[in-house]
Length: 222
Image 1: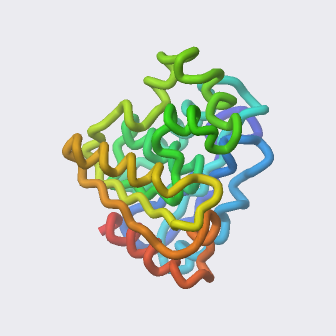
Image 2: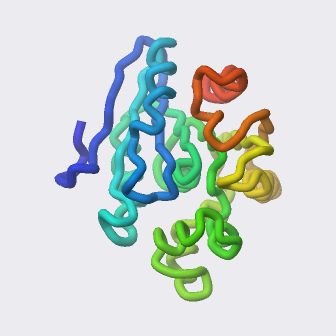
């Protein structure tokens, strides 16, 4: 299904028999070299369990400028038309948390997400990934960070589950801890879930920690 004219504005839709829909947002530090195939095993596993799954592709850095990535995710999730849980990995975790402040969703699961955008820019998470997305550093583009940083939109009034592994060498586990602390302080139903593994095991349905990740998703689906 397409939601725009650009080749990257499409969704791989898998219909299931269960209630609700899982919307997947892949990672890759918002860069064009990584696409939705990265999270396709998760889509296949969830669909095999009877869930409807939307695996969203979107314009990334190198394909379009600010704020195309945010606009695309909001447009795609807005088309679901019913209860959905948004699940994002890495940069997709940022997008999932951000879109929950723009589009009605039933819940959000971040898997090693870049959830505190301004801090991630200052800390060099992903090298220059964050300023490349936003167009500069926080002191250069404060209005854009106010728009794009999930922390700036708390409280969400949406259940949030932030799953992270201590051996993650791409996005520090402290990022998820920091976001959950801020969300809870703002009054949100936010839970930090630590699991064994690294950055990529969270989107590997064959890994022993997958049942924990799956449990977060299915609990929010109700």
